[in-house]
Image (cartoon, rainbow, N blue to C red; front, side, top):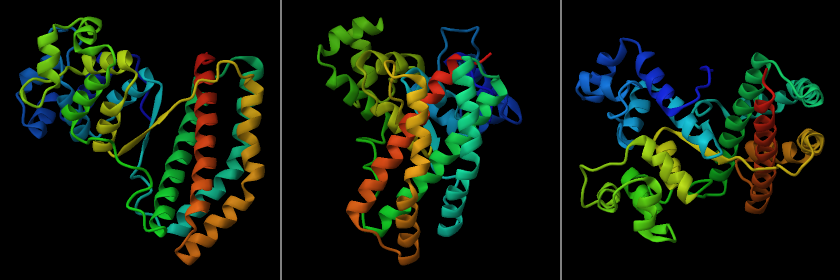
Length: 307
């Protein structure tokens, strides 16, 4: 797990400079001018910025998604890699998921202690974060495999568009106050926003910084999902539980282990039979996503307590 970064600029610089061979080698893979890429990845040159497409290409060729992680954090999402368990057998994957219960108890106690003290060591936090996200990835892969047994094309519908510029256009078009007001809120000229969101101007693209502003202003995230889809990640919204007691939230999460015995039995039988009832699958998905939500909410609170 790479150390978390605080800003887009830091993520961009880290992604480019940490690549083996440096920016020149990465530029060759991206088929761009090394000097131009250097300038766009240099935090000291704010007039030079990566476009949204260039940022996605940078992540794709470097296999480093720190930029996506910053976008997710700023828009209150979590990004989970989808492919890490793709080539593991069904029952091996299932056994790894159920075996996580043995670690779950120790994690619960670590979180309980942190919430009681309102402080947590950074390394301990990062360990809990990594453990939870690995579990998310296992569960998402299990859901995909169970879904295939129902003869569904996919567990979830893909993003409305996997084309980045089309996703920008959809976001702009859905803004209720219209393009002129949106351009003003983004600090852009109306004509520039029109060009950067219109497929009629393929050479005009939003910068990655303006893309983040767009998502924050509109509260719509097709661009985030389209970028994540291209990078083989899934984005999960992090719920805001400001009004709920910390310990009540922890209890809601930890209690799921006690209640999921029936779910484990259903999944095991489905993997053995190669089939599952669609209603059963829907119930399993609801349970798993409820678990994601409580874990992500807990992580958000723990992050505030890191010493």
